[in-house]
Amino acid sequence: MLRARRWARRPRNTASPGRQASVYDFSTGWFATISKDSPVEVRLYGTEESVYTRIVRLVLLAKEVDFALIEADPFDGGKLPGDYDLRHPFKRIPAIEVDGMRLYETDAIVQYIDALIEHPKLTPPNAEDAARMRQIMRIVDNYAYRPLVWGLYVPVWWREGLEPAGEAIEQSRHVLGVLDSFFDSSPDACFNGWTLATFHLAGVLGAADSVAQGSALIDERPRLREWWNGLRMEPIMVKTRSTHTQF
Image (cartoon, rainbow, N blue to C red; front, side):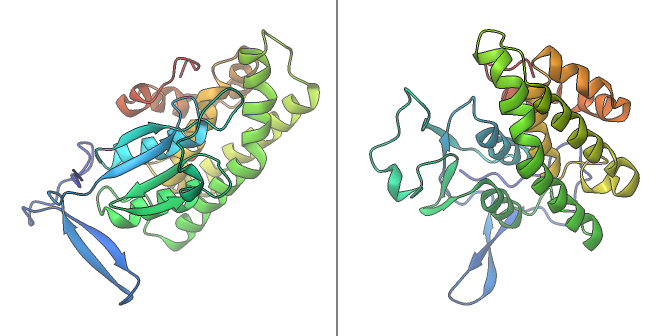
């Protein structure tokens, strides 16, 4: 069941008793609407430990969408559903199915969800802030994920306390500084309220802050640390926390 209710922290629209979600009709080129009570089935494929699966889970929970998490583990020793190549031709995670419509790639999934369900809107209305939001998401993908997760978190957490390489530490320090600069240039893109970039960054910080080396680097950015300390205790963050991360 799709629940398109506003998040409690957001102002409510009292003028309309019904809540609706918009779905794009590719045959007509128009958005159609579906009510919150429409029987829409959402199936998310991934693992609780996956950073990118968690990003999608956070967006779904922020939108108050009920969904089933189907175990799909492409890593060593893991298993994928027998028909998974039909859901993701490259056999990566996450992938999603919304009322029979299949989609993969985290960026495509979260932007579809944000367009599908009106409230709360996770893309800033201002064009510059929306562009900066996407810029932050690409920075996380291209420059933050590998050093912070695979460079810091994985060696320490999964490989019996192996020390991170100096290169990973310096790359992590640099990208955290770049991300921190958005507090000055475009705080509405990520930090002043929930956006898609908020959850993109949260998934990575949740892993990095689980090890001492990552925590120390976040501490070097007081604004980022203060913001993150608040976000990491939000109910949806706690709900999506895996047994392999502290946050």
